[in-house]
Length: 138
Image (cartoon, rainbow, N blue to C red; front, side):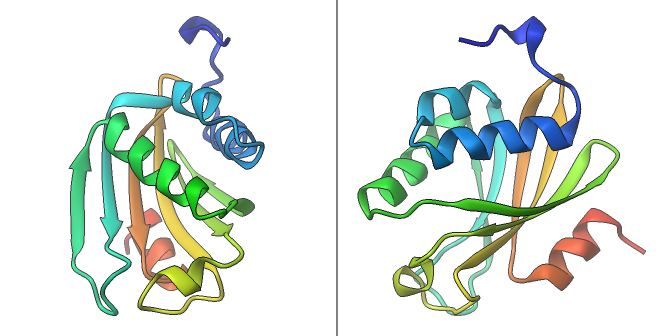
């Protein structure tokens, strides 16, 4: 089990380690890389044009990830674009579009903030263009 002091600070490495653990079905290891006070902005999959909803705390994310695992879905990290302590990520989850009202070729687009070796914020975006705008506002 990783100790907080040994956690990497590099956003790319933290994000890749978290998604690799989740891809192996190792939710516990992934959650070690998530700050307990995570701010998670998500898009409700039940609506075609959802308004962003904000959740606080690692436990709410864990609940959503467990639900995804029960549905037999596994996420694959495709791309990480780092800008300082934040990164835009493209994640492919085969079969995901069958579980949500909008279609995005089974992909999620997120902006993740890493501080102190942990993911402290996760912001879901509708598409790559929105993720890049959130990552590097003009």
